[in-house]
Each structure stands twice: as structure tokens, then as C-alpha cells.
Image (cartoon, rainbow over all chains, first blue to last red; front, top):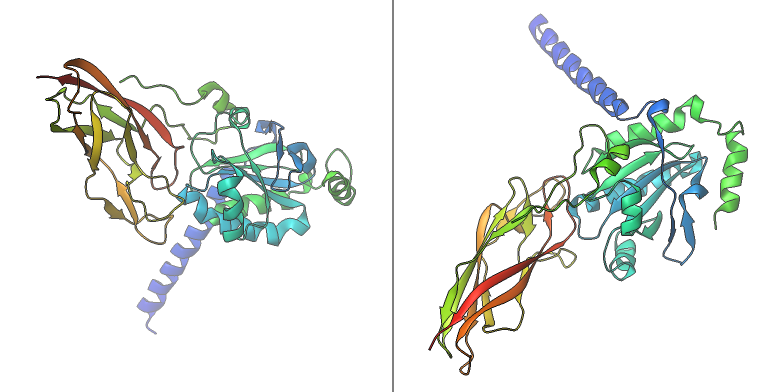
Length: 197
Length: 158
């Protein structure tokens, strides 16, 4: 290989690496500083089994809250990513919570859960919950909550899978986030599991 | 047509990601259709002209998947009876979020309704009312299904 080819290959590699670095930084910028995070509104909704789900039950976990609907194409694209995240990170105190905004509720959502092999918890949203979160109008709308139940990041519309993943990992790996209210993650995880049905 | 706020901007501001604004008003609006005049027993066409906000699409009247919400126009009983609808030819568009092209409408388009005046229709003016149901998306997000009230001025003449 000539010196020219080596230089060109090096330049391409440098550009590629610069692109990767930029993407990671862009994803990080979506995470709010701790002081800028607001407590996510709590709610009480029923899951597909009729069990009550409260956001407070997830304290100590990083939670991805996804507002979606069966008629929303961009939402459908994201669902396999969330299935993967749930599977991959649930052992690290992470959970996905889907909030469907379908008007006809379980009639549409129940079969969709089966056909799309959704492995995370699902509830049917309401206008009240939508307003609690500031009037969710466009779907998908996704919030990522830190272990204290505060909104660390929010996205309206389709986002890159990598952005979600980077944000989740940043929160899971944050040493300041490792303990909540002075308790160790292990104890908290047990406490959260204890209150979960 | 007045644009109604569909959200609480002040509230959303508490949680909104940087640079995100919510969609205001209806992305699909219609122009008031021309008054139609019909004789009892006759048929008449009326076009409803629609304007869709740039960058958005609505599902056509025949979307490819069952879970997609079709564009639908219905008229309430009145001086005229709707007997058929003519939609424009749907565009098959490919979006990042969909593996296969979707059957959609975008831009400005018309739905033509074929009306029939009953043989014993009473002469005189009236207003026919109806509903236009649609569900709009752009390339990255979707808006909830909406139903617009539509109206048509009708004159039955001898």
C-alpha cells in the first residue's frame, strides 16, 4: 500500500471515529444534570393482568417510560429495542414500562403484545396521565427516569436505538445513582421487588 | 377555521426535552365546500378540499395494515344521502419506521362525495353535517386520531 493510500485510509478511519465520538456525546447531552431533573408524576394504572402499577413501585430502578399506540408506525419500530433492553438490563435494576394511548385499550393492545412478543410491563394510559406528563400528544414519547424517579431524559418522536442505550447505560453506570436514599442497590432492589406484584 | 390548542404548553414545558415543541392545532384542515343545489331524485357531487400540513401524511382510506387508522368521511342523515366516495389515488411512501411502503395522502387533496336527493326531498336550504376522521404522522412521530366536524350547505330546488 502506498503512502497516499495509508494516509487516505487513516483519514477515513479518523473521520469514522470522530463520528462515533460525536454520536456518543450527542446522546450524553440528552441526559439532564441532576439539578435539572424533575420528579416524574406518579400514577396508578392497571396492567394486562389487572394488577395496579404505580411509578413509585419502580424507585431504585432506571425506568424507560414509553407512551405509544398500536396505530403508531414509529412506535412499532422502537418496540423490539425495548424488548431487548428489558431482557438485557433487567438484572441491573432496569425496567421498561409501556403506556398505550389506544382509545379502545386492551382490545387492541392485548393481541399486539402477543404478536410483537412484548416482554415488558404494559398499562393503558389515560388523558389524566398524559396531562400529568405535560400533555403527551405526539407518539412515541419516551422518558427515561433515574433511580430516584426523576426524569433524566425525554424524547418526542423516533430516536436512534443507540441514543436510548447510551442514556440507559449512563444512568445505570452512574456511581452517584448507585445508591438511593443512602441504601445499597442490593437492598433497594430487594425492596422494589418486594412491593412489585 | 380556528386552530385549537391540543396540549398544555406550560405543563409540557416542565418535562419537554430540549428543542421539542408540541404540534399545535390540526395538521389537516378543510376548506368549506361550495353550496350544492339538487333537484329531488337527482344525484350531485361535492368535493371536500383538504390541506395537510407540510411534512405530514395521513393514512389513505385503504391502509395496508389493519392496525392503521384509515381516512374516513361520513355524513349524517339530512336533505341529501351520501351514496359513494371518491378518494384520490393513494401514494405508496416508504418511511424509516416502516419496512414496507405505506398507503398515504399528503399535501392538498380532495374527497368527492356522491349525494342523492330523495325523490320526496322538501325544497329549501339546509346544512348537512359530517365527520372526517384521520390519523396523521410525519417521518418520526404520529399524532392521535382526530375527528373534524364538516358541513355542507344544501339547497333542494324544484
